[in-house]
Amino acid sequence: MTFSQPRSNPSSSEVTSDTSTAWWRDAVIYQIYPRSFADANGDGVGDLAGISSKLDYLLDLGVDALWLSPIFPSPMADFGYDVADYCDIEPLFGSLADVDALLEGLHRRGMRLLLDWVPNHTSNEHPWFVEAAQGPTSPKRDWYVWRDPAPDGGPPNNWRAAFSDTPAWTLDPVSGQYYLHLFLAEQPDLNWANPDVEAAMHDTLRFWLDRGVDGFRADVVHLIGKGQDVPDLPDQMAGAPVRWIDHPDAHDYLRRIRLLLDSYPQEPMMVGEVYLLEPGQAASYLGTPEDGELHLTFDFRPLHTKWDSDALTKAIARAQGEFSDPLWPTWVLSNHDRPRHRTRYGSDQRARAAAVLSLTMRGTPFLYAGEELGLSDGVVPPERVVDPGGRDGCRAPIPWTSEPDGGWTNPWLPLPENAETNNAQQQVGEDDSMHALYKRLLRLRKELPVLRQGSMNLLDVPPGVLAYERTLDGQRVVVALNLTDKPVDCTALAGAELLLASDPARLDLAQPLGPDEAVVARSNP
Image (cartoon, rainbow, N blue to C red; front, side, top):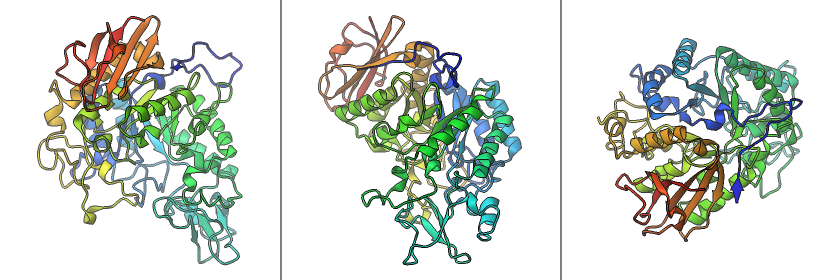
């Protein structure tokens, strides 16, 4: 099965321009959880100045753009995903001047910046909600979703909130109405059906685009189209509405957002967190060449797929098929919401092979800060747990040195479990390190257009092996992974020239693929 890139330009009458050479298709995007990346002022929490101090490290690694998890003012009930002001910076992280300095440093190095935009909900301390909660006659009452109680006095419908498995409604004792929150009670949902809300949220995008930001990651963006009726869900869906809300209105809102983005000269991109796992759902939020919506959406199925050749091959085939020409996929192995893939897969060897997989697929790779060091999750004792969703382990601070606290002063969370060996001080410059492997992979992507732009075809290989070819303009590259615990011969590599291997000891393709080993090879078309 072959999955190819677009080969023709849309007509001039179409709304969106040809994206086959767009920067975000070639880019490798590096996600930073700001609290845990680098701390410049020694308070134990990462900050913008700390990120700026590591730009040369990131440039040397070879990434093209940074995505920062939320940095806006927030009471931190959900660590920044409860926004109290979309047009300022949380003082814990710095100031607007620090953002400007970061942008200048990135752009001077030829890199870009994406911010995490949270369109579905605000903090209950946002001035909009504070005003809305003053009563039913408040001018901003309809900026949020309010409903009268059910006949029995309980919540208006059967929706449940993420994290807590409690009703997605909280009673306002003053007015006697409930307000909707698909997440924490401190995160009331905005009512995008109100045109004033849509206009105000567009203004928040303009604020950052005017400042020079290059794009956004849009948090649970499919939820903005939930509509106003909020009916009961069928019993089998009621426990997880976040995964089932797929309303046509969201597509209308996204088309208008796309027109706004396309009006800016820096070619801003928006990648959406569309947490819908049924076939074709996430891809549908990209729209069409004639009527564009998001530029990219995350496909989360790989994060839920075990280390198994059949399972991974099926996940890749489904994703590449759903995101076939003219759509463009993403590839994500780790993020701030899921255990790191080094922890999930259970060994350095598997993590090394997974790095080869993620950086040679057709699509835009998103790396989570610390992947390049092979970090596992932190072990967080009960007394230090702070996240309402139990995600502290994957948010452990990046260890920059071999010291017990990894170069941090009283870090806000315990360091990753393997920080003593997998830290920047020990790995950078070491030829056989995980960092060196990522750096070689990123360099290979830049050197070989076929790895960025070529079509992709899954290959017939022995059981336990995953293999695919990338082809472009007469170039053919084969990628093969042995996902078993025994050596395997792979005929797809016959006569090929080794370009890179996850095992630093491999010099050629004379020997079978070792257990949990991956190789990239140049072959004749």
